Amino acid sequence: MKCSRRVKSNKSTVWNNGSRGIYQDDTVKFTDMNPAAERIMGYTFEEIHGNTHEDPICESIYPDWTDFLGEKHPSMVAMKTGVEDVVMGAKYPNRKAYTWLKY
Image (cartoon, rainbow, N blue to C red):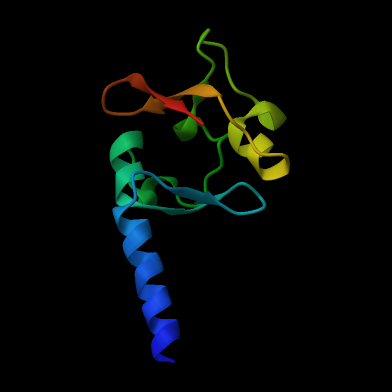
């Protein structure tokens, strides 16, 4: 039992202090978000919990300013095949601008 609690505590420490982290379930709904991701994205977890990348609050674009839609969105690709070297602009609410991310 001690080991199990310690592992859980270590996982929590890594998650809470990691440089970024957003989890989505198999329906692509946001199910968790760490503090670093909240700062990067400009949203609190409470604001996006239960939303998907297709909800207006989570608008995202390619570098050429066209929309990431449906199956081509990095989160959808990552769930199926993995994704790397993708640049995406994520709508940042308070700046009325985009946060640029690289997967």
